[in-house]
Image (cartoon, rainbow, N blue to C red; front, side, top):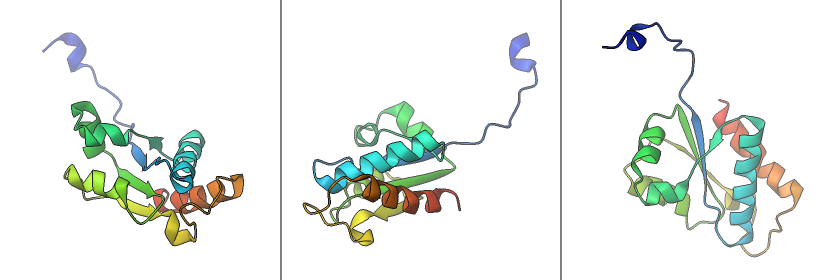
Length: 128
């Protein structure tokens, strides 16, 4: 052990709360992306890379496994974010579907009101 490794360290940093958005090409995917970015900007959680989960990038996988909470935001019933996390063996997460909030793929513009509605639903899940 080096002298540096024997020094006491603060253990006050909590594991991160991570947010994964489907960020798909449809309007509801855009809303899920914007809502995740809004939550991250507010400090509610950290937006993280869903593609890194799909690609099984080691650092992204390890950080995700160590997270204190995970929120997957899907725009439509295809549940791509949820399926990507589950396909990587991750099962402990909360799942928000914008279609369950009445947002319909191909019919819901990415307005500030829709983004706020999605962010409010996500906020409630990460702060509980």
